[in-house]
Length: 473
Image 1 (tube, rainbow, N blue to C red):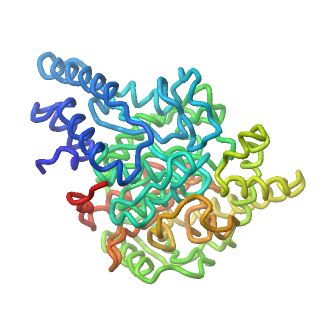
Image 2 (cartoon, rainbow, N blue to C red):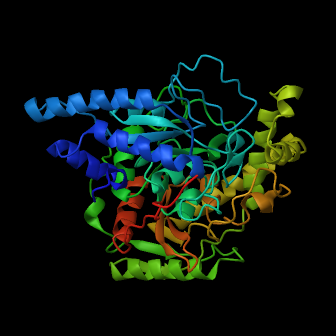
Image 3 (spheres, one colour):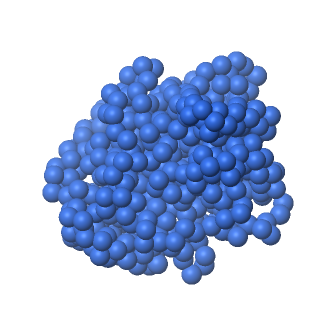
Protein backbone atom coordinates (compact mmCIF):
# COMPACT_ATOMS: atom_id res chain seq x y z
CA UNK A 1 0.00 0.00 0.00
CA UNK A 2 1.40 3.37 -1.01
CA UNK A 3 -1.03 5.37 1.16
CA UNK A 4 0.62 5.60 4.56
CA UNK A 5 -2.73 6.38 6.22
CA UNK A 6 -3.94 2.87 5.39
CA UNK A 7 -1.19 1.05 7.24
CA UNK A 8 -1.66 -0.64 10.58
CA UNK A 9 0.51 0.32 13.53
CA UNK A 10 2.46 -2.91 13.14
CA UNK A 11 3.17 -2.10 9.48
CA UNK A 12 4.24 1.46 10.33
CA UNK A 13 6.66 0.22 12.98
CA UNK A 14 8.23 -2.11 10.39
CA UNK A 15 8.58 0.79 7.93
CA UNK A 16 10.18 2.98 10.61
CA UNK A 17 12.55 0.19 11.55
CA UNK A 18 13.72 -0.20 7.95
CA UNK A 19 13.81 3.54 7.25
CA UNK A 20 11.26 3.25 4.43
CA UNK A 21 8.96 5.76 6.14
CA UNK A 22 9.29 8.29 8.92
CA UNK A 23 6.96 9.34 11.76
CA UNK A 24 6.89 12.92 10.43
CA UNK A 25 5.93 11.76 6.95
CA UNK A 26 3.19 9.52 8.31
CA UNK A 27 1.85 12.15 10.70
CA UNK A 28 1.75 14.75 7.92
CA UNK A 29 -0.24 12.35 5.74
CA UNK A 30 -2.67 11.55 8.54
CA UNK A 31 -3.16 15.24 9.41
CA UNK A 32 -3.89 16.06 5.75
CA UNK A 33 -6.43 13.26 5.68
CA UNK A 34 -8.04 14.59 8.87
CA UNK A 35 -8.28 18.04 7.28
CA UNK A 36 -10.10 16.55 4.30
CA UNK A 37 -12.38 14.00 5.96
CA UNK A 38 -13.12 15.27 9.46
CA UNK A 39 -15.45 18.06 8.27
CA UNK A 40 -17.71 15.28 6.99
CA UNK A 41 -17.16 12.53 9.57
CA UNK A 42 -16.82 14.72 12.68
CA UNK A 43 -14.63 12.08 14.29
CA UNK A 44 -12.34 14.60 16.01
CA UNK A 45 -13.46 17.44 18.25
CA UNK A 46 -9.87 18.65 18.72
CA UNK A 47 -6.81 18.26 16.49
CA UNK A 48 -3.44 19.67 17.56
CA UNK A 49 -1.28 19.62 14.43
CA UNK A 50 1.61 21.49 16.04
CA UNK A 51 1.87 19.11 19.00
CA UNK A 52 1.50 16.06 16.76
CA UNK A 53 4.25 17.15 14.37
CA UNK A 54 6.56 18.03 17.27
CA UNK A 55 5.99 14.60 18.82
CA UNK A 56 6.55 12.95 15.43
CA UNK A 57 9.85 14.85 15.06
CA UNK A 58 11.07 13.52 18.40
CA UNK A 59 10.09 9.98 17.37
CA UNK A 60 11.88 10.37 14.06
CA UNK A 61 15.10 11.28 15.89
CA UNK A 62 14.71 8.25 18.13
CA UNK A 63 14.27 5.94 15.14
CA UNK A 64 17.35 7.43 13.48
CA UNK A 65 19.35 6.82 16.66
CA UNK A 66 17.95 3.30 16.85
CA UNK A 67 19.04 2.47 13.32
CA UNK A 68 22.50 3.96 13.85
CA UNK A 69 23.34 2.78 17.35
CA UNK A 70 20.56 0.47 18.54
CA UNK A 71 19.17 3.07 20.98
CA UNK A 72 15.86 2.14 22.53
CA UNK A 73 12.56 3.20 20.99
CA UNK A 74 9.08 3.06 22.47
CA UNK A 75 6.70 0.21 21.74
CA UNK A 76 4.50 2.56 19.67
CA UNK A 77 7.22 5.01 18.65
CA UNK A 78 5.89 7.40 16.02
CA UNK A 79 2.49 5.74 15.57
CA UNK A 80 -0.42 8.25 15.34
CA UNK A 81 -3.16 7.71 17.94
CA UNK A 82 -6.22 9.53 19.26
CA UNK A 83 -7.85 9.88 22.67
CA UNK A 84 -11.60 9.82 23.31
CA UNK A 85 -12.84 13.06 24.81
CA UNK A 86 -13.82 11.36 28.07
CA UNK A 87 -10.15 10.69 28.88
CA UNK A 88 -7.91 13.30 30.49
CA UNK A 89 -5.11 14.58 28.27
CA UNK A 90 -2.55 17.08 29.50
CA UNK A 91 -2.67 20.35 27.60
CA UNK A 92 -6.02 19.68 25.91
CA UNK A 93 -9.54 20.23 27.28
CA UNK A 94 -11.54 17.12 28.11
CA UNK A 95 -15.07 18.35 27.55
CA UNK A 96 -16.81 14.95 27.69
CA UNK A 97 -19.11 15.95 24.84
CA UNK A 98 -20.78 18.44 27.16
CA UNK A 99 -21.47 22.16 27.09
CA UNK A 100 -21.42 22.06 30.90
CA UNK A 101 -17.62 21.64 31.11
CA UNK A 102 -15.61 24.86 31.11
CA UNK A 103 -12.70 24.53 28.67
CA UNK A 104 -10.91 27.47 30.32
CA UNK A 105 -9.26 25.64 33.19
CA UNK A 106 -5.98 23.93 33.89
CA UNK A 107 -5.70 20.70 31.93
CA UNK A 108 -2.48 19.48 33.49
CA UNK A 109 -3.15 15.78 34.10
CA UNK A 110 -2.86 12.75 31.84
CA UNK A 111 -5.12 9.79 32.52
CA UNK A 112 -3.13 6.56 32.96
CA UNK A 113 -3.74 5.40 29.37
CA UNK A 114 -2.75 8.78 27.94
CA UNK A 115 0.47 8.77 29.97
CA UNK A 116 1.29 5.21 28.87
CA UNK A 117 0.76 6.05 25.19
CA UNK A 118 3.04 9.07 25.49
CA UNK A 119 5.71 7.01 27.25
CA UNK A 120 5.49 4.43 24.44
CA UNK A 121 6.19 7.13 21.84
CA UNK A 122 2.73 7.32 20.27
CA UNK A 123 2.00 10.55 18.37
CA UNK A 124 -1.19 11.95 19.91
CA UNK A 125 -3.29 13.69 17.27
CA UNK A 126 -6.21 15.02 19.28
CA UNK A 127 -9.51 14.15 20.97
CA UNK A 128 -12.33 12.14 19.38
CA UNK A 129 -16.02 12.87 19.67
CA UNK A 130 -18.37 11.32 22.20
CA UNK A 131 -21.99 11.87 23.21
CA UNK A 132 -22.40 13.84 26.41
CA UNK A 133 -20.71 11.92 29.25
CA UNK A 134 -20.66 8.86 26.95
CA UNK A 135 -24.35 8.38 27.61
CA UNK A 136 -25.50 6.42 24.53
CA UNK A 137 -24.59 4.01 21.77
CA UNK A 138 -24.57 6.66 19.04
CA UNK A 139 -22.32 9.71 18.77
CA UNK A 140 -24.16 13.00 18.72
CA UNK A 141 -24.18 15.90 21.14
CA UNK A 142 -25.23 19.49 21.49
CA UNK A 143 -21.54 20.39 21.79
CA UNK A 144 -20.06 18.69 18.73
CA UNK A 145 -23.06 17.77 16.57
CA UNK A 146 -23.45 14.49 14.69
CA UNK A 147 -20.58 12.10 13.97
CA UNK A 148 -20.89 9.91 10.89
CA UNK A 149 -19.95 6.45 9.68
CA UNK A 150 -17.15 6.23 7.08
CA UNK A 151 -18.99 3.44 5.25
CA UNK A 152 -22.13 5.54 4.80
CA UNK A 153 -22.26 9.06 6.17
CA UNK A 154 -26.04 8.90 6.53
CA UNK A 155 -25.46 6.34 9.31
CA UNK A 156 -24.03 6.58 12.81
CA UNK A 157 -20.59 5.23 13.70
CA UNK A 158 -22.15 3.98 16.94
CA UNK A 159 -21.13 5.15 20.36
CA UNK A 160 -20.09 6.22 22.68
CA UNK A 161 -16.60 5.77 21.16
CA UNK A 162 -18.01 6.62 17.74
CA UNK A 163 -15.42 9.26 16.94
CA UNK A 164 -12.59 6.89 17.87
CA UNK A 165 -13.96 4.10 15.71
CA UNK A 166 -14.73 6.32 12.72
CA UNK A 167 -11.22 7.78 12.89
CA UNK A 168 -9.53 4.38 12.79
CA UNK A 169 -11.66 3.08 9.92
CA UNK A 170 -11.18 6.27 7.89
CA UNK A 171 -7.40 6.19 8.20
CA UNK A 172 -7.27 9.11 10.62
CA UNK A 173 -4.65 7.39 12.76
CA UNK A 174 -4.36 3.60 13.16
CA UNK A 175 -4.89 3.55 16.93
CA UNK A 176 -7.59 5.06 19.12
CA UNK A 177 -8.37 4.92 22.82
CA UNK A 178 -12.03 4.42 23.75
CA UNK A 179 -14.22 3.54 26.71
CA UNK A 180 -16.91 0.89 27.12
CA UNK A 181 -19.65 1.11 29.76
CA UNK A 182 -22.33 -0.95 28.01
CA UNK A 183 -20.75 -1.67 24.64
CA UNK A 184 -19.20 1.69 23.80
CA UNK A 185 -16.05 0.20 22.22
CA UNK A 186 -17.63 -2.90 20.68
CA UNK A 187 -20.74 -1.23 19.20
CA UNK A 188 -18.78 1.31 17.11
CA UNK A 189 -16.22 -1.36 16.20
CA UNK A 190 -19.07 -3.45 14.77
CA UNK A 191 -20.74 -0.47 13.08
CA UNK A 192 -17.49 0.82 11.51
CA UNK A 193 -15.79 -2.48 10.69
CA UNK A 194 -12.75 -2.48 12.95
CA UNK A 195 -11.46 -4.33 16.01
CA UNK A 196 -12.48 -3.13 19.47
CA UNK A 197 -11.57 -4.76 22.78
CA UNK A 198 -13.21 -4.33 26.18
CA UNK A 199 -10.56 -5.74 28.53
CA UNK A 200 -11.27 -7.38 31.87
CA UNK A 201 -12.33 -4.77 34.39
CA UNK A 202 -9.30 -3.31 36.13
CA UNK A 203 -6.80 -4.55 33.55
CA UNK A 204 -6.56 -1.05 32.05
CA UNK A 205 -6.57 1.58 34.82
CA UNK A 206 -8.82 4.64 34.81
CA UNK A 207 -8.49 8.05 36.40
CA UNK A 208 -10.74 9.56 37.41
CA UNK A 209 -13.02 6.58 37.85
CA UNK A 210 -16.20 6.70 35.81
CA UNK A 211 -19.31 8.10 37.54
CA UNK A 212 -21.08 5.09 36.05
CA UNK A 213 -19.14 2.74 38.27
CA UNK A 214 -17.62 -0.67 37.75
CA UNK A 215 -19.31 -1.35 34.42
CA UNK A 216 -16.94 1.15 32.75
CA UNK A 217 -13.85 -0.17 30.97
CA UNK A 218 -11.18 1.46 28.79
CA UNK A 219 -10.21 -0.28 25.58
CA UNK A 220 -8.45 0.11 22.23
CA UNK A 221 -9.68 0.45 18.64
CA UNK A 222 -7.55 -0.64 15.69
CA UNK A 223 -7.83 -2.25 12.27
CA UNK A 224 -6.17 -5.49 13.37
CA UNK A 225 -5.95 -7.79 16.35
CA UNK A 226 -2.16 -7.42 16.31
CA UNK A 227 -2.50 -3.66 16.78
CA UNK A 228 -4.93 -4.13 19.67
CA UNK A 229 -2.40 -6.47 21.29
CA UNK A 230 0.35 -3.86 20.82
CA UNK A 231 -1.84 -1.28 22.55
CA UNK A 232 -2.66 -3.66 25.39
CA UNK A 233 1.03 -4.17 26.06
CA UNK A 234 1.28 -0.42 26.63
CA UNK A 235 -1.92 0.41 28.52
CA UNK A 236 -2.42 -2.70 30.68
CA UNK A 237 -0.29 -1.53 33.58
CA UNK A 238 -1.62 -0.60 37.02
CA UNK A 239 -1.86 2.97 38.27
CA UNK A 240 -2.12 3.89 41.96
CA UNK A 241 -4.79 6.48 41.19
CA UNK A 242 -7.18 3.65 40.28
CA UNK A 243 -7.78 1.58 43.39
CA UNK A 244 -9.55 -1.08 41.27
CA UNK A 245 -6.64 -1.59 38.88
CA UNK A 246 -5.24 -5.10 38.77
CA UNK A 247 -1.62 -5.93 39.57
CA UNK A 248 0.64 -6.18 36.53
CA UNK A 249 0.38 -9.68 35.11
CA UNK A 250 3.55 -9.54 32.99
CA UNK A 251 1.66 -10.75 29.92
CA UNK A 252 2.94 -9.94 26.43
CA UNK A 253 -0.35 -9.76 24.52
CA UNK A 254 1.43 -10.22 21.19
CA UNK A 255 2.91 -13.54 22.35
CA UNK A 256 1.07 -16.69 21.27
CA UNK A 257 -1.29 -14.74 19.00
CA UNK A 258 -0.57 -17.28 16.27
CA UNK A 259 -1.36 -20.28 18.48
CA UNK A 260 -4.84 -20.70 17.03
CA UNK A 261 -8.01 -22.16 18.49
CA UNK A 262 -7.49 -25.88 18.06
CA UNK A 263 -9.11 -27.70 20.97
CA UNK A 264 -10.70 -24.60 22.51
CA UNK A 265 -14.26 -25.09 23.75
CA UNK A 266 -16.47 -22.36 22.30
CA UNK A 267 -20.12 -21.77 23.17
CA UNK A 268 -21.87 -20.30 20.15
CA UNK A 269 -24.91 -18.40 21.38
CA UNK A 270 -26.73 -16.68 18.49
CA UNK A 271 -29.22 -14.88 20.77
CA UNK A 272 -27.88 -15.35 24.33
CA UNK A 273 -31.27 -16.96 24.97
CA UNK A 274 -33.27 -13.74 24.89
CA UNK A 275 -32.42 -11.52 21.88
CA UNK A 276 -35.64 -11.47 19.86
CA UNK A 277 -34.72 -9.48 16.77
CA UNK A 278 -31.32 -10.12 15.21
CA UNK A 279 -30.79 -8.81 11.69
CA UNK A 280 -30.86 -11.90 9.43
CA UNK A 281 -27.57 -11.08 7.71
CA UNK A 282 -25.84 -10.59 11.06
CA UNK A 283 -27.30 -13.89 12.28
CA UNK A 284 -25.98 -15.64 9.17
CA UNK A 285 -22.55 -14.01 9.50
CA UNK A 286 -22.30 -15.10 13.14
CA UNK A 287 -23.20 -18.67 12.20
CA UNK A 288 -20.50 -18.54 9.53
CA UNK A 289 -17.99 -17.33 12.16
CA UNK A 290 -18.89 -20.33 14.31
CA UNK A 291 -18.24 -22.59 11.33
CA UNK A 292 -14.90 -20.89 10.68
CA UNK A 293 -13.84 -21.52 14.27
CA UNK A 294 -14.87 -25.15 13.99
CA UNK A 295 -12.92 -25.48 10.74
CA UNK A 296 -9.90 -24.02 12.54
CA UNK A 297 -10.08 -26.82 15.10
CA UNK A 298 -12.20 -25.41 17.90
CA UNK A 299 -14.90 -27.49 19.56
CA UNK A 300 -17.98 -25.37 18.91
CA UNK A 301 -21.31 -26.09 20.61
CA UNK A 302 -24.45 -24.06 20.06
CA UNK A 303 -25.63 -23.35 23.60
CA UNK A 304 -26.96 -20.37 25.54
CA UNK A 305 -25.42 -19.41 28.89
CA UNK A 306 -28.82 -19.56 30.62
CA UNK A 307 -29.22 -15.92 31.61
CA UNK A 308 -32.18 -13.59 31.38
CA UNK A 309 -31.90 -10.25 29.62
CA UNK A 310 -30.17 -7.94 32.14
CA UNK A 311 -31.19 -4.76 30.29
CA UNK A 312 -32.97 -3.28 33.30
CA UNK A 313 -29.96 -3.98 35.54
CA UNK A 314 -27.61 -2.21 33.13
CA UNK A 315 -29.78 0.81 32.48
CA UNK A 316 -30.84 1.10 36.11
CA UNK A 317 -27.23 1.34 37.25
CA UNK A 318 -26.42 3.63 34.33
CA UNK A 319 -29.34 5.99 34.96
CA UNK A 320 -28.41 6.18 38.63
CA UNK A 321 -24.91 7.22 37.59
CA UNK A 322 -26.36 9.83 35.25
CA UNK A 323 -28.30 11.33 38.13
CA UNK A 324 -25.18 11.49 40.28
CA UNK A 325 -23.53 13.59 37.55
CA UNK A 326 -26.71 15.67 37.07
CA UNK A 327 -26.95 16.60 40.74
CA UNK A 328 -23.46 18.14 40.64
CA UNK A 329 -24.52 20.57 37.90
CA UNK A 330 -25.97 24.01 38.50
CA UNK A 331 -29.40 24.87 37.13
CA UNK A 332 -27.68 26.84 34.37
CA UNK A 333 -25.54 23.83 33.46
CA UNK A 334 -28.50 21.46 33.56
CA UNK A 335 -30.23 23.67 31.01
CA UNK A 336 -27.31 23.10 28.63
CA UNK A 337 -27.41 19.29 28.70
CA UNK A 338 -28.33 16.85 25.97
CA UNK A 339 -32.03 15.89 26.29
CA UNK A 340 -31.01 12.22 26.25
CA UNK A 341 -28.71 12.67 29.23
CA UNK A 342 -31.31 14.77 31.07
CA UNK A 343 -33.91 12.03 30.52
CA UNK A 344 -31.52 9.38 31.86
CA UNK A 345 -30.83 11.47 34.95
CA UNK A 346 -34.57 11.96 35.53
CA UNK A 347 -35.10 8.20 35.52
CA UNK A 348 -32.09 7.74 37.79
CA UNK A 349 -33.52 10.18 40.31
CA UNK A 350 -36.48 7.82 40.87
CA UNK A 351 -34.24 4.94 42.02
CA UNK A 352 -33.82 4.73 45.77
CA UNK A 353 -31.12 2.92 47.75
CA UNK A 354 -33.17 -0.29 48.02
CA UNK A 355 -33.72 -0.40 44.26
CA UNK A 356 -30.00 0.04 43.62
CA UNK A 357 -29.13 -2.64 46.16
CA UNK A 358 -31.47 -5.07 44.45
CA UNK A 359 -29.94 -4.25 41.05
CA UNK A 360 -26.46 -4.94 42.41
CA UNK A 361 -27.60 -8.20 44.00
CA UNK A 362 -29.04 -9.32 40.66
CA UNK A 363 -25.81 -8.28 38.98
CA UNK A 364 -23.92 -10.51 41.40
CA UNK A 365 -26.12 -13.48 40.54
CA UNK A 366 -25.54 -12.85 36.83
CA UNK A 367 -21.78 -12.57 37.30
CA UNK A 368 -21.62 -15.75 39.34
CA UNK A 369 -23.69 -17.64 36.77
CA UNK A 370 -21.43 -16.54 33.90
CA UNK A 371 -18.26 -17.39 35.86
CA UNK A 372 -19.64 -20.87 36.38
CA UNK A 373 -20.63 -21.17 32.73
CA UNK A 374 -17.06 -20.32 31.75
CA UNK A 375 -15.87 -23.37 33.68
CA UNK A 376 -17.33 -25.42 30.82
CA UNK A 377 -16.20 -23.19 27.95
CA UNK A 378 -13.12 -21.21 27.04
CA UNK A 379 -15.01 -18.62 25.01
CA UNK A 380 -18.49 -17.46 24.03
CA UNK A 381 -19.26 -16.43 20.45
CA UNK A 382 -22.15 -14.06 19.70
CA UNK A 383 -23.02 -11.31 17.25
CA UNK A 384 -21.58 -7.97 18.39
CA UNK A 385 -24.84 -6.10 17.84
CA UNK A 386 -28.30 -7.17 16.72
CA UNK A 387 -28.44 -4.54 13.97
CA UNK A 388 -26.06 -2.80 11.57
CA UNK A 389 -25.46 0.93 11.89
CA UNK A 390 -28.69 2.93 11.91
CA UNK A 391 -29.29 6.47 10.70
CA UNK A 392 -27.22 9.31 12.16
CA UNK A 393 -29.63 11.71 13.86
CA UNK A 394 -29.28 14.69 16.22
CA UNK A 395 -29.31 14.40 20.00
CA UNK A 396 -32.78 13.96 21.45
CA UNK A 397 -34.29 12.50 18.28
CA UNK A 398 -36.36 9.90 20.16
CA UNK A 399 -37.73 9.46 23.70
CA UNK A 400 -35.04 8.04 26.01
CA UNK A 401 -35.73 4.81 27.89
CA UNK A 402 -34.01 1.47 28.46
CA UNK A 403 -35.12 -0.04 25.16
CA UNK A 404 -34.15 3.02 23.12
CA UNK A 405 -30.78 3.24 24.80
CA UNK A 406 -29.59 -0.37 24.51
CA UNK A 407 -32.38 -2.68 23.35
CA UNK A 408 -30.77 -3.02 19.91
CA UNK A 409 -27.43 -4.19 21.35
CA UNK A 410 -28.41 -7.12 23.61
CA UNK A 411 -25.02 -8.83 23.26
CA UNK A 412 -22.79 -6.11 24.66
CA UNK A 413 -24.01 -4.96 28.09
CA UNK A 414 -24.18 -8.34 29.90
CA UNK A 415 -20.40 -8.52 29.79
CA UNK A 416 -19.96 -5.08 31.30
CA UNK A 417 -22.00 -6.31 34.23
CA UNK A 418 -19.87 -9.47 34.48
CA UNK A 419 -16.66 -7.51 33.71
CA UNK A 420 -15.38 -10.20 31.31
CA UNK A 421 -13.10 -9.40 28.38
CA UNK A 422 -14.91 -9.17 25.05
CA UNK A 423 -13.80 -8.24 21.55
CA UNK A 424 -15.67 -7.26 18.40
CA UNK A 425 -14.14 -7.93 15.03
CA UNK A 426 -15.55 -7.40 11.53
CA UNK A 427 -17.16 -10.34 9.73
CA UNK A 428 -18.32 -8.85 6.42
CA UNK A 429 -20.77 -6.34 5.00
CA UNK A 430 -24.54 -6.39 4.66
CA UNK A 431 -26.06 -6.19 1.20
CA UNK A 432 -26.42 -2.46 1.87
CA UNK A 433 -22.67 -2.19 2.40
CA UNK A 434 -22.66 -1.73 6.18
CA UNK A 435 -20.19 -3.60 8.40
CA UNK A 436 -21.20 -6.48 10.66
CA UNK A 437 -19.36 -7.57 13.79
CA UNK A 438 -18.94 -10.80 15.70
CA UNK A 439 -18.05 -10.93 19.41
CA UNK A 440 -15.78 -13.26 21.35
CA UNK A 441 -16.12 -13.24 25.14
CA UNK A 442 -13.53 -14.78 27.44
CA UNK A 443 -13.34 -15.76 31.09
CA UNK A 444 -12.39 -13.05 33.56
CA UNK A 445 -8.70 -12.16 33.10
CA UNK A 446 -8.63 -14.18 29.86
CA UNK A 447 -7.73 -11.16 27.70
CA UNK A 448 -4.79 -12.89 26.01
CA UNK A 449 -6.96 -15.88 25.14
CA UNK A 450 -9.60 -13.60 23.61
CA UNK A 451 -6.97 -11.92 21.46
CA UNK A 452 -5.50 -15.25 20.39
CA UNK A 453 -8.90 -16.57 19.26
CA UNK A 454 -9.75 -13.26 17.58
CA UNK A 455 -6.47 -13.43 15.66
CA UNK A 456 -7.36 -16.89 14.38
CA UNK A 457 -10.85 -15.81 13.34
CA UNK A 458 -9.52 -12.62 11.77
CA UNK A 459 -7.59 -14.70 9.24
CA UNK A 460 -10.92 -15.84 7.76
CA UNK A 461 -11.86 -12.33 6.64
CA UNK A 462 -10.18 -9.80 4.34
CA UNK A 463 -9.34 -6.39 5.78
CA UNK A 464 -12.13 -4.03 4.72
CA UNK A 465 -11.69 -0.30 4.15
CA UNK A 466 -14.38 2.10 2.90
CA UNK A 467 -13.71 4.06 -0.30
CA UNK A 468 -13.44 7.66 0.90
CA UNK A 469 -11.74 9.20 -2.11
CA UNK A 470 -14.89 11.04 -3.19
CA UNK A 471 -15.96 12.12 0.28
CA UNK A 472 -16.22 15.89 0.52
CA UNK A 473 -17.62 18.36 3.00
